[in-house]
Length: 402
Ligand SMILES: *Cc1c(COP(=O)(O)O)cnc(C)c1O
Picture 1 (cartoon, rainbow, N blue to C red):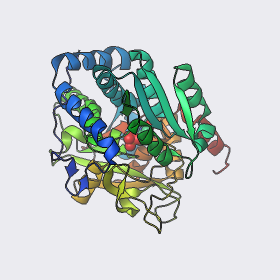
Picture 2 (picture 1 turned 180 degrees about the vertical axis):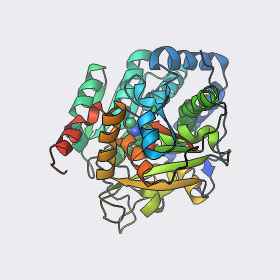
Picture 3 (picture 1 turned 90 degrees about the vertical axis):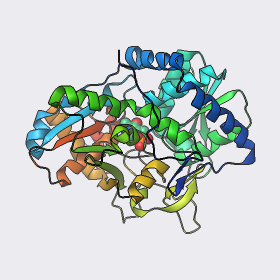
Picture 4 (picture 1 turned 180 degrees about the horizontal axis):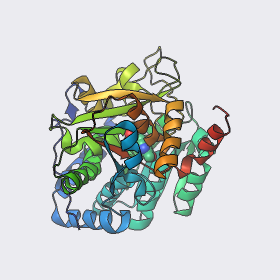
């Protein structure tokens, strides 16, 4: 069994700033909850018995380590050595469970009885409901009323797992509003633990989420060493919504300057179209959900409505770690639009026999746009599987555009 190291390798200061980004911009009423969480987290993440529980669940329950698969067809097609990190093979079908297990164990150790979570497409809601069921905790998931309608299969999963799904109808009734509702509910409930779904939110959430997701790059290093005799690839590619799978895939390589890190945003209908989720490309510095970060804003300076064909990427902000790494030039930001992602999904299905999540398809799509050399070792984080996206894929195959 792998013993994960969750050591803090992040460029973050004690106030939760990544350069100019991050911090904890929360109302007075939340400060106590956050302080309690922060001290429990710092104590537990170095506690051997906590880590033993984490290691065991990662191994026996989630199914880690996930394979690092050399994709022969993709490698031939793009003229490089392309490896897929198979986060799609995790229990519940995506990387989100890594974080949900870490935070769930924390909630349990803190003596909390209830998990509060938000969800957009329902993937994090399912992961939160799964872990709550596993650990014997109650679970309430806040979800935009629009998304409750659009994502029925995941709503049913959450309910079968015993979670209460609360439809949020404020604002545009999507993820952005669900996060606000979850934070509000946490304010008034000392017995609850807020399980966030990405590397966003007030400090210490982005740090905690990145550390729990760091199992991804921890494994990549060891797997590459076994497969090719060196720990460092030339490229790591990941799609970014809030930035948690990217943070996990990049984590152990941030300080390894010879590894090029490519973060792929959802362009939607095009980065300049007004229907996009490319917050690093078109956003401004603003505070969103408790952190100073890159946010797509409207004329009043409020978070704008994001658009992507992929429900897991249409968030108007991005976590402070990625905002900082982009501002420093440490990561390269690229974008893929709806059609490019759909084409990449069909290519992977047809040539490798893997149906990717629409989110992951955005990462796959940029392989077309890179000038790779035959000796380049490329690791692409396949963040999730495509079952939840079948209706969208079928509409596209039928020639019907969204
Ligand atoms: C939620 C989700 C994402 C986007 O979230 P990040 O926090 O940016 O990783 C990407 N891929 C899949 C499969 C998801 O479910």
